[in-house]
Amino acid sequence: MNSRRLALGAAGIVLCGFLATAAQADVAAPEKIKAAGKVVFCTELAYPPWEMLNPETQAPEGFDIDIAAALAKTMGVTSEHKNISFDGLIPALQAGQCDAIISGLADKPERREAVDFVNYAVSGNALITRAENPATFKTLEDLSGLKVSVAVGSALEGELKKASDALKAAGKPEINILSLQSGTDAFQQLTAGLADVYFGSTDQAGYFNKQKPGLLKLASPQLFSLTIGLATLKKDKDLHDAFDGGLKELKSSGEYKKILANWGFEAMGLE
Image (cartoon, rainbow, N blue to C red; front, side, top):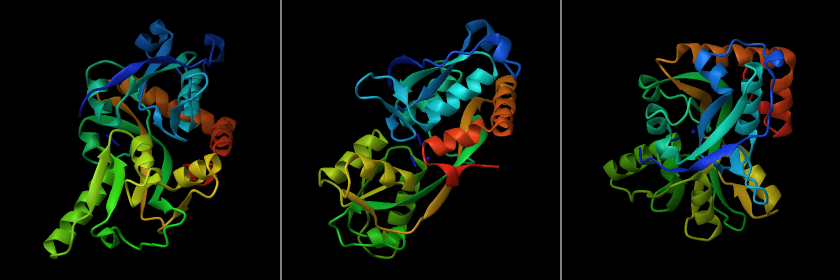
């Protein structure tokens, strides 16, 4: 899961069709957001089931998309998404291309130097292989000498690099890390037989197996648990506080649990 990502890449602005009226607002929106009538989110729309483009309509959909729309609604505004490559999310936010980031972004200490987080989920992560592969793994060090695909700039990529460095220091073959631009690209390396293993979130295995039954299997126990948050610039404390208040409202109303259940994410919720 995907947790993620310096190159700047925007594939355009995608509007979400979730309308809200000022009468529905339960949380005070910052003046800038209220005047615009919307919150613009930077999102990498290539990490299903968290965020993706519907193949037929090209509209954004996914767990994060629903969370963003619901949070915007508590402020009486709409949500909009700019499609930004994962490793370009924070630079895009800093450049003023969006108001906030929602994109399966792990709350990491180094990221907190640049942004503030409102956390809304916990993502478990594991090693995934094709179903016919008999291999199983207990730790990342078990990947010595194998080709492992992962999303570039992600927290999981960082963990693979640390494990590979440890293997090298021990005189063992390093992990051949295939860092791809998006979680979808990294996953496709596995399905195409170009990677032995894909390192992603456990919910992705379930999602992809629904798309293509019997294609994949979890090849390890859950190795890491990452707290996922919505990010805002430190100067935008009013917006951070609005999101924090909005999330509390969604939890109080039961809407948060409904969104979790809609995506099969019940075990990933935060109290």
